[in-house]
Amino acid sequence: MLIQVEDLAHTYAPGTPLAHAALRGVSLEIAPGERVGLVGRTGSGKSTLVQHLAGLLKPTSGRVLLDGVAAHARSSAAQRRKLALAFQYPEHQIFEHTVLREVAFGPRNLGLGKDEVDGRLSWALEMVGLDAEAMGARVPFTLSGGEMRRVALASALAMRPEVLILDEPTAGLDPQGRRELLGRVARWQEEIGLTLILVSHDLDELARVVERVVLLDGGQVAADGPVRQVLSDGDLLRAAGLDVPQPVALLQTLRDAGWDVRTDRLLPQEAVAEIVRGRRALETRG
Ligand SMILES: Nc1ncnc2c1ncn2[C@@H]1O[C@H](COP(=O)(O)OP(=O)(O)OP(=O)(O)O)[C@@H](O)[C@H]1O
Ligand SMILES: [Mg+2]
Figure 1 (cartoon, rainbow, N blue to C red):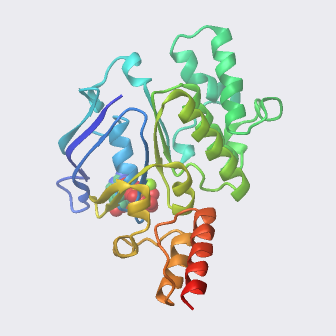
Figure 2 (cartoon, helix red, strand yellow):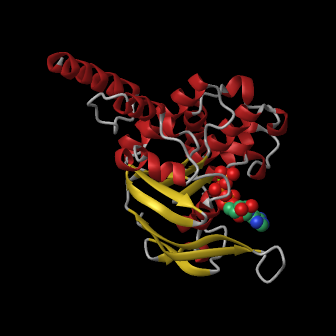
């Protein structure tokens, strides 16, 4: 699915003293199969933007097109099911009485047969690392924050969408749980060529998954480019209220100390290789 955002603006509570311009002239295009990270400081407009992509908000001006059709005007279930959004606050999304019913809700609504629904249910729960036996009958509102987030994710996955948008998918999960979950989603993304849009404050985590990063600041696109370029640009990120990923910070410190190293190495293993290379260069020089 081709996503086109054209000069999108969104003002909350327009015409009141509480009016707030959350998006101001955002334009971008996301091609089928892309893995895009959406970053920016708190309040920069990330959740507002992904809700527009999901057609949940109506633009104040500008438009969002999904394969040429305005996102908020898509009426048929067939159009809507192609895109799934897991909300930043899963409690806004979950409404069924048990975990199984919650995850099965979307597929059932698509009119799928029982076998297909059951198949998707067990697959989706496994993807997010939830045990159907132990958790299936639980009431979602009695779950921990991390468990509830996994349920919300499973619900989005069970739709088998063409576009999957995860708004802070790993908030509240422990480090190992985050890695496993994103690893599984990323492998699935590659298998089926899904478009994946990840909103995250964890740039180290994003660096492992996405190929492109869109940086929002004050409701505007402050940068949009290859992950290596955007996430290694310390000046750009700091101006937008963010810090560079750890490996980049380390390499920048070494370079400030006189080492001849590249600083656009986002992953720990890449940074180590660069440090080894830089050390050899120092030795041959000295
Ligand atoms: N329903 C609302 N009514 C009024 N203002 C809102 C509403 N929702 C969001 N805002 C404001 O719009 C701006 C953008 O909010 P948004 O939730 O899109 O930011 P965000 O980048 O997702 O932030 P975070 O990283 O904290 O999740 C914020 O200043 C927020 O206070
Ligand atoms: Mg948000």
